[in-house]
Amino acid sequence: MTMVDDSDTTDVLGRAGLPREAIAAWRTNEDAVAGDYRRDAEDFSRQWRIGAEMLAFLPAKPKRSAAEALAAAAILQRDRAARQRFLGTYAETIYRRLTDGFAKFKRVEHLVRDAAAILPGLVPDAALLRREDGLPQRDKDGAEIDQGLLLSHVLAHGACGTHLCHAMLLPRPEAREQSRHFAQTGNLDLEGATLERRGKASIVTMRNPRFLNAEDEATLDGLEIAIDVATLDAETDIAVLRGDTVEHSKYRGRRLFSAGINLTHLYHGKISYVWYIKRDMGLVNKLFRGVAQPDISPDEVAAGTIEKPWIGVVDGFAIGGGCQLLLTLDYVLAASDAYMTLPARKEGIIPGAANLRLWRFTGDRIARQAILYGRRLDCDTPEGRLICDEIAPPASIEAALANVIDGFTSSGVVSAAGNRRAIRVGQEPLDTFRRYMAVYAREQAYCHFSPALIANLERHWNAQNRAP
Image (cartoon, rainbow, N blue to C red; front, side, top):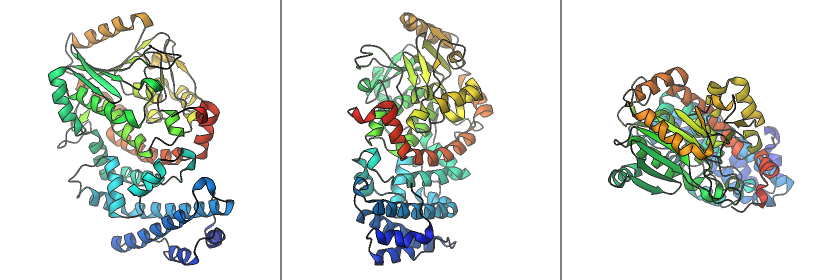
């Protein structure tokens, strides 16, 4: 974003044709936090609302002149800086109001929705989100960045951030009914995932056949529900995560683990910012920590999660988000021709919690090479075996999986949850994850709307010529 000197802001806005009265009203607030929440909320909210009105007065982003683009940048820059100052003082106050003093759990998608209602202008409301939802990524002003600022400040606060982590580890409301169905039938068919019981194992299969089992808005909820149900199922001792067969002509009929985030949908503006946070604080963290209970802290000391070992089966490849998933699992079985990559540099985004976790497997240098330079890790190599526990020929992968399941369950897994917690408390306690997510929530928001993201997707993915 073009940076505008504050002293020149009035002239910049005037040259763009914005009404002088609106400019003067927007400039009235001195951006100083007085320390009185009611007064500050009223003053800052008024500024943000006027800023939003001036932004709406300008043409849509692709049609703006140079002067109009500079004015838009000036409005966004000043108002975003004001949000940072406001949240630096009042993040806890806002979170307490949204949760009735920690009495209610709210998932991130509901938290940002409700924040727009209790303090207009702090984050985009439903109407603004709808206007941007239908646009290609390059044509958005990035209103959702303000959601990232709110979530970052909430997560940076110890009590608020821990409470939000707890909320995201609770089973989704849909999981209760789906668990009853699964108990009766041993099968679930959800959008984005299927679940079946096979002996003492719950098998979660990721499904997005047109897009090589990539993850997107259509797959996220179903996959998280499947993980909830698999984890909570009392009839099974372990769970398995695998990719389904795909439709792409190059791989038709083959199983693939996952192609990561759906880059075509990302380019065309079909992935929301909150999607990243829902994913990593929800389904990914549930694979790592288990499913929480409402009345017990999910941290390792309280032992407040229900969990079981997870086995991953890598057919073909685990790209991006697929590789991120492997870093949460207890045992990884891979086909000898499979490989893993974290192409964050080529995508222009942060690879989930891989920056927090990958180095524990590979060491710092290989982790940096994978994240910053896109190094490919073939599963059947010394480097690949740092992540993968067992390699099998593609033709023998089913038999190998049966042996792994039998090996895990033949003597029972009564100590599995305790051992998982004991490992986590030394590697990545919940508070470490919370602090990481505070940084991730902010940085990913800016990455998601960076011009570099669009350039990278066009250069490395030919995204402009792919149908969503």
